[in-house]
Length: 250
Image 1 (cartoon, rainbow, N blue to C red):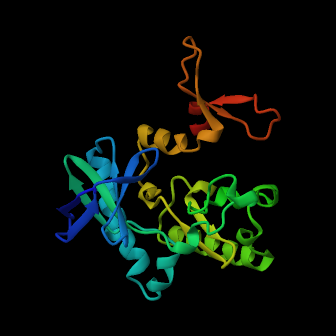
Image 2 (tube, rainbow, N blue to C red):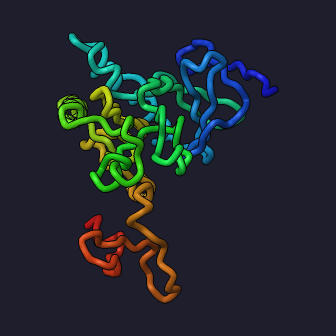
């Protein structure tokens, strides 16, 4: 049985997590708290001063702009917002609330869940096209037109509220929005990529944000070509037209 680690967050509060990875993303490893009410996500790579300062703003003043205002309670279900920063064994981590249970597949895919997605997160990519829904998802997971309308309203309000606070999500894609078309709920995740547009990201931060869209990017294989990454033009069929990443940033 995995042991429980006890540590202290940057605000002095006590944090516990079970020393067993429950999920990994492109940059972080995620651990449950003992009661599964929150998770702790540790960055695998060392974070520099600028990154740490940005995360402190996200869990501090940026969070206060959203939740510590009149009507702030309304927004808690529309974001999975980091609440604290922790450091353990030289790694920087974030404390985040656990996703609500309605954002996990209860039935999964058709044919007795042949894709094995039951219990996994309802990423927006599953609902980005009617073809995906009808071809892969069980009828119980699809929802109806009115619920999709509610989902769209919730996403629009959440994005608009960020922008009203002077903030922008650095990777607002269908992979970072959870939706539940059976209830009309939606939530924006991966908030640790949030930034203030008035503070221009570094070149490395731009690259890391863009690399998350892995289905449209690939490393350059030609050693004589000076560009490091190439981006597919998703409007061409087949996807053969490519552009240097640097040109897209200029």
